[in-house]
Each structure stands twice: as C-alpha cells, then as structure tokens.
Length: 522
Image 1 (cartoon, helix red, strand yellow):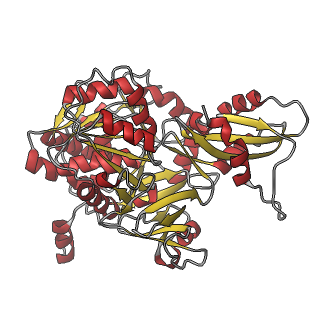
Image 2 (tube, one colour; image 1 turned 135 degrees about the vertical axis):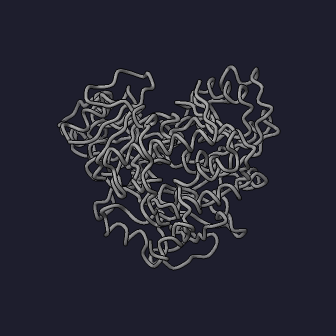
Image 3 (spheres, one colour; image 1 turned 180 degrees about the vertical axis):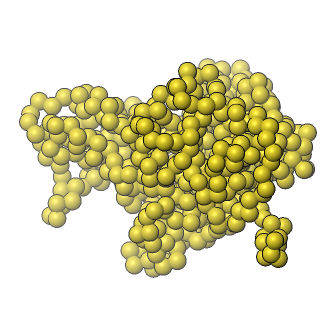
C-alpha cells in the first residue's frame, strides 16, 4: 500500500467507525435496548461487522445504494453502521409513503438492494414493480414477508470471513436523505461522514449530551432528527439508547420509568400528547433531566406547563433541516422563556446569517433568508447540479426559510420561503399536494397551504375552485388519501368560486392563510 493510503487509514473517522471506537471504551455497557433485545457496545460492533461482511458477500460495493423501509428497531441501527463501514450509501425511506412515492426514491437513488420490515414488504413489493433488487425482510412480526424477500437475519448472523477494510474518506457519500423540499418531487440530500460527525459534536457540546445518558428514541429513525441528533450521538458518546417503534405517549412514559431515561426528544405535538396522557402524573419521571424539541417552536403556555410538571427537566430547541445533517441553531435551557418562539443562536460549528434577495446581509430586525456556512452542510443534491448550485450560491447554504435576528443575536423563523408545511413533525411540499389533487377531474384550481393547528402545529389545507358547482369537500379529502401519504392529505378543504391573485396572476397564499386560519382553532 502507498504511504498516502496507510496514512488515510490511520486518520479515518467515519460513521462506520463509531460502534468500534465506543466498544473499545465501553465494551460491556448496554448500547441499545429494543424490546427484549439488548446489545452491549461490543455486541453492537460485532453484529455490524457480520452484517458488513454479509453485504460484501452479497456483492454490494462502495458507492452502491441500499434502501431501508422500517420502523425503529435495532436492525435499523446495525444496517446504517454496516453500510457506512463498507462505503455503501444508505437510503432511509419514510414508511408513510405510498408505493408510487417509494418507487420514485428507489429509481432516483439507483438503489440496488432494498431492506424492509416484514409488515411493510407488501408496500415495498408494489414499489419495486418487478425491478431486479436484492431484497431482505426484517423479521419484526408486523406482518408476513412477501415471497422473494430473504430474511435479514442472514446478514446479522453471517459467519463468513471478514473482508478487507474499505477506505472511506470524510466526504464520501454515506447517506441519501430524501427531503420534501419545495418541489413536487423530493430531493436526495447527500450526507457524508464529515457532515454527520461535525454535527454530532455540535449536538453533544451544545446539547450537553454525555456517556451516562439513557435516552428513549420514539420518533422515526428515517428522519435525521432522531437518527443524527440523538441516536448516533448516543452511540458516539457511549450513552444507552432505548428504541420504541412509534411515539405512543403511554409507551414513552413507561419506557422512561422502566429504563431510568435521562433525556428525550420529540416535536411539540408529542410533548403535548405526553402532558395530556392519563398516565403522566402516575409515572415516575424523576430520572428525566434533559428534554429536546424541534420541527416548530414550543408554545409559551406549553413551556410553562412543562416547567411546572417537570421542574427538574431542562429544555433545548433544535432548529435545522435535513441538508444541515440537520442541526443549525439551538435555543438553550436558560433562554426558553425569555426568548420563547426563537430558534436560538447558531450551534458551535455553524455560522448563520440572514440575507436579502441579492444575498447581502441584513441588519437585526429585518426579515430575510436564513443561510449557513458549516461542515454540517450536505454535499449537494444527488443527480441535481442545478439545485445544488442554487442552494450554495455565493458560498452559503440557502435554507429556504425566512427569518429575522433580534439585536441580541437570537433567530426567529417567520415563514417558509417556498410554502413548506410542517405538520406533526413531517415536511409537506404544498406543490406536491396541489399536483396530486389536480388529478381529480372536477378540480379547476387548487391552492394548498398550512394553517396553525393546536395539535399538528400546521394543518395541510386546500382551497379548491371546482369546474362545476356542487363539489363536496369530503370527496376531495377522500381522493387525497388515494394519491398521497396520510400526513400529506389535506385536513381541511374549502370550495370557492375563485382564488385571490395579484396582478401577475400569482395566488395570494398569505391572504388564504389569513382568511381560513380559523379552521384550525378549537
């Protein structure tokens, strides 16, 4: 081997290296708890090695893409480290997508293998539609795997020889995260070990995360919030992770009590659901010390209630997006009430400013687009040079969010520049919903936007102009369920004679939000 190669080997620090390095520090300590399954850090590293070797034996090589469709489970964690260890790119897929939406991700990413939990193989099989992919089913007992899907246990129990190590560079693609963005089709944000590990350092330092933490993970791991702000940081620091398949309030409370959890993350909607859960007051939550939220600001009245009912818990607000791996700014515990609603200040490895339409910085108090410089940032959008160049114009990553800094340097996000709707912790592109609804033969025009909602934070709302009078709003909602994932389907539909427009013909969505905002109020 050449000297540069062996030097690069000695200096390598990638996502795939994390389980091994934590195993050398905390080998006998519990790393992951998933139901009856418990893995120490040494056991986690060993099963990652076996799975990585099995991927190699199956013919997967550096740069290949493996799609993953699954609820939270220990196999999800193992696969992401195993693929990273071989230089294979993981493509996590939202399990709420329909077969056509999944098929787009498979085709665009060029996936050569597909791993799905048993109960999701029916949907996955429809998405594949005869494509020649390696197929593995994770046996979670959520349904019967479809014919032609090999048991994922073949990978985790592989007993063949370990292949030679693969040299993975800091900026080699490690993961493709498909983000709703603002287009009718999702974009594949390329994340590298450089982006991820710098982001983990920011989370650990600014979020005060330590090796003695025990964390309950209930939000989907296909989102980089739960995966990269929390689970992977826990593995990096040597903390213990408890995996739940879904954010069911009673199950979360039981897990915190049973495992003595010290930290927990959820969007405001889930924190609100915990407060309203009948078991809240009877559950021992005395070990909980750190609470995190994101996706939207926490309402002041909820912050006040949390401080009363969980007086020993300190809270952080994490703001960011997939392309930032995902952390950008943080509102810290002592800033919660004095700066309620703020996204805080830039994380330790992030530089954030607000710019005008000419990309010039604007003074405090002036609304503009939020832009970042950071090693957290995506390498770009897969197979889309034009969108990559636009997002990184003038040497800053453009978030697409509008924001304003106050005189003390605290950022507030005031709007989505291109009509992104954030509902229940999910991103929904209004244009995608509009294009889906336009498939209904009776719709002449449609405008989709988000309105404030006490539970969903924002509710997807559609205002429709029919081709003929008499169109029933419930018919549109029912149709939406046939062409869209459930979280993208409008919660409210209003039928009108005409949409408000400016002189150039642009639909005035701000006016629609104002006019119909009352629909989401109790």
